Image (cartoon, rainbow, N blue to C red; front, side, top):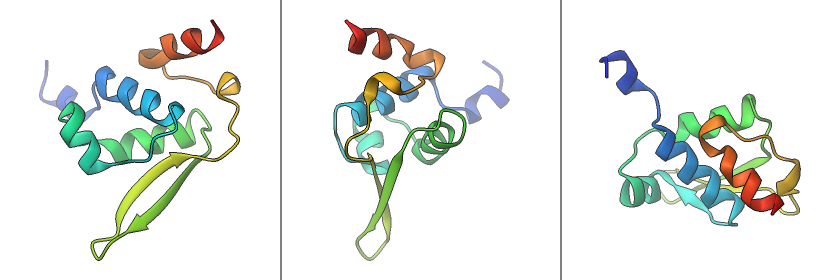
Length: 95
């Protein structure tokens, strides 16, 4: 892996984020660090919102204004476009 590759989120982190959101969870950077030792949640959320058009809501909590992300209520999971590393989640949902 080159040094430049280390700046991008791993497929495991993207998969985790997608799975957490479609499961109805509210996630934050702290959750990502604890569960997958990741540190690029903001970048993953940005990718899902801008490239894949996921309806992700953000709420800033606490004195540090920590971002907490969730899917908008009523989101049709079957209509979401998934990144390649999380494509199997769409197949699981269709089954």
